[in-house]
Every structure is written in C-alpha cells, then in structure tokens.
Amino acid sequence: MKILYFGRKKCKRSKELYFFLKMKTSDIKYYDFDDNNVAKNYIKKFKDSHFDFIITFRSLIIIPDFLLKNASMAINFHPGTPKYRGIGCVNYALYNNESYFGSTAHIIDRKIDNGAIINVKKFKIKKKFNVEEVLELTWDVMLVQAKNILNEAFDNKNYIRKSINNYKGEKWSKKIYSRNQLNSFYKVSLNTSGMNLEKKIRATVTKNYRPYIILHNRKFEFKEDE
Image (cartoon, rainbow, N blue to C red; front, side, top):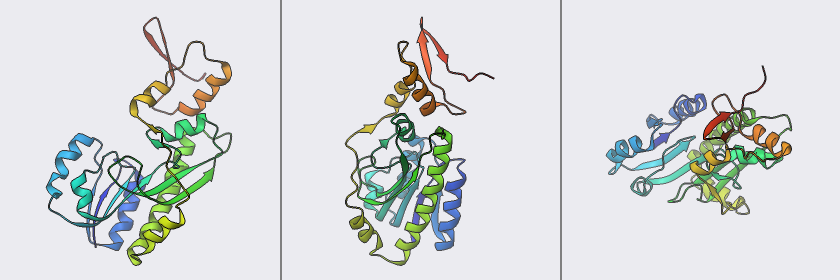
C-alpha cells in the first residue's frame, strides 16, 4: 500500500497520525509544508507516481489535479462540520453560538471542502469554551476519526463507499469562508453593541490573534485586563 500524506508543521496530531500510518505500510511519504506555493513546486515530482491513498490532515496545501488523478483515493480531514467550509470555521461557529462542532472526513475533489462526505464527528460546545479549547477538542476528535476511518478503509475496500452512503444526508454548506473574510471578521466596528463585542471576543481571542478596531488610521488590538 502506497500512501502520500500531508500534515501540519509543528502539529503533534499530524505526527501521531503519521506514526499510525507507518504501522500500516512502509511505503509512505509525509510532508508538512506551511506554504502552498512551496508545496506546489515540490510535489510536481510526483506527477508520474501512483498512490493508493492521498491523505491530508490539517494541511494548508491544495492538492493539484494531477495528484488526484494519480491516487486511487484521496481523503481530507476537515476541522469543522459541513456547515462551515474554508477558513475560520471554529470562529464563525462560536460567534453563531453553535451548540455542536466537530470534524468532517471527505473525498478530495477539485473544489475546497466539497467532496463526498465520508463521516462527521461532533461534540457539544460548552458555554465556557473559548476558541483554543474548541480547536483542541476538534483536533482530538479529528485524530480519532482519521485513525478509525483509515483503519477500516485499509482492511475493507468497500468501507468508504458504504460510509458515504450512510452520511448522504449530510450536505456541505453553499457558503465558503476565505482568508480575507476571516481577516475582516476580526475587525470590530466602532459602533458595535456590547453583546456583539462579547461574542466577537469569545470567537476570536487566542494566544496569537486578537480582534481589533481601527481609529484615526491606527490599529488597536483587544487585550484582557491583567
């Protein structure tokens, strides 16, 4: 069995899935590019290679057509439910006060977060949860989901087809969020209400990112009181 696997740089769950896959086959290539342009140039070398599985887990790269054509099956593990496609899924889910969130396994096709849904795993979002807590839970659920699906798929060639049929009631949203939309989402209007501000804070604040306002052409980021 020949596998091409793309994970996320400095992601312990990506590495854990790699070690899981290594136990299944010795013929595996693993990459964790953090730049899609670098990835596109590098993976051109696989244009004449065939893979039984192409797997992406928290990966930032977009799989080109020639690679999809060279794979018997290509599966992505998406950190979000089918309602949230693209970038910033957890942010919008928290802002919208969703009761549940989770991860979606799907076939990779030519569009982003669009292929046939294999499986959806959900967990309940507690009111006290912040962005980072929901992300950690999502990645944990997604790792278990990936191991279970791939374990079954490797042993039973009909498993994926049957699972897709079982989840045919799950549909992707027509809306897909872009990086530019997420960047704009972090901007807080000067006339926003107190309630909306609290929702925005809960949906955006992490160690590395903060909501912000623009005042007199200056950017002011949110900071919690010490």
